[in-house]
Image (cartoon, rainbow, N blue to C red; front, side, top):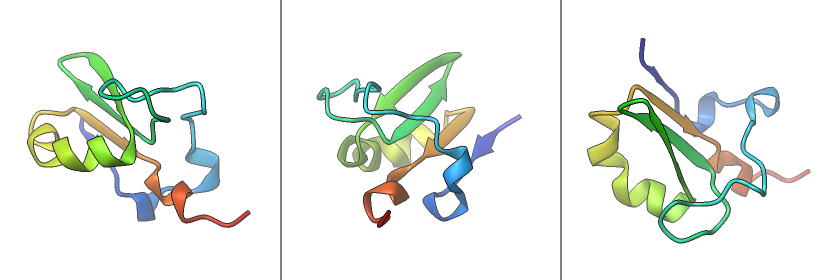
Length: 73
């Protein structure tokens, strides 16, 4: 079962990444989580967008919380 979502489909209740979750590429706060071959990869918004095209074709799950970057609380 694939669960690929877009930032627009996220609601506050679905946010699960925290400030402790770090990008696997650069160490910045992660806003995107992708499951590939059973392993979860975490990415900041920049690296998530950079690798999105290639990863979405092989990811079994794509969880995108980048909408949080534009949210005003």
